[in-house]
Amino acid sequence: MKRYFLLLCFMITLFSCTRNPLKINVSTVSVDLKIKHLDVDLLKLKKEQLEEAIPVLRSSHGEFFDLFTYRMISIGGSEQENFPEMLYSFVSDSLIRELEINVAEKIDTLKLRKDLDLAFRHYKYYFPEKEIPVIYTCISGFNQSVVTAENIIGISLDKYLGADSRFYRQLGLPVFKRRNMHPEKIVPEAMYAWAVTEWPKADNANNLLSQMIHEGKMLYFMDAMLPEMPDTLKIGYTKKQLDYCRKSEASMWTFMAEQKLLFSTDRMSIKRFIDDGPYTTPFTDQSPARTGAWLGWQIVRSYMKQNKDVELADLMNNADFQGILNQSGYRP
Image (cartoon, rainbow, N blue to C red):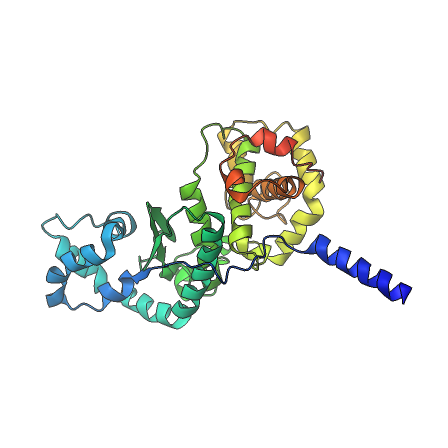
């Protein structure tokens, strides 16, 4: 009996050490998530209906309608004399009609709503005073995946048709980009975009280390919003790429330190470690891109583990990047 008791104590201790503290019960958290489908409302219109429908679309879709026409499909605004003709030219384009069919086949909008609702329940739990943005979906003809503005997230569904989509191959998109253009990436990319909007890069994020930790904060925000999601989906790595980072963490960090890169303000040096691409050029071609962001993520995770009294809101508002590193106890 004593052996069984000791084993039970060991198992309880092990569970408490490995349990993810971000996996919380948000079933009682209430959110009023609004999702509006500009793609559906716009593409159902016939030519003779379009001109009269434009004021209705602007009213029902608010600022996003202008974001869509100005920034996403670049035809200007409704004040232009030929705007109805230009909008109809977009709506009636054979490619857009093909994309409409493909989006309906590939994107489960009911599941998307459920997943976004769960993510924003977590958001409301951690940030009860903040507004929940209105989500708008659209088909943009392969323009921006996600756009944001005050209280708005716009999602271009035709950017998530699957890595094997013939459209992406015909566009000549590289494999590293196509790999993340699938429906499971919609929610993490929307939440990442919202984090960047709510907590933009601080003015003092001017060297590699500060930008690494800034990216780490954005990724940790996704840990909190999407605690059941695997890391591969959050950062957009394959399992092989994630394994590379875990095995090479110490050597990557040592390389940056020894080469005196961490405090570099050189724009190109920073881009090599932070921006997307086929791989991180200072490392091997087996490495993924954004290894600087991944290392920043591990620093922030270590910081939050070492400082259990720090709330998520405190982290997101903390621009003392050196202080976060110093208090993280980070030892790769």
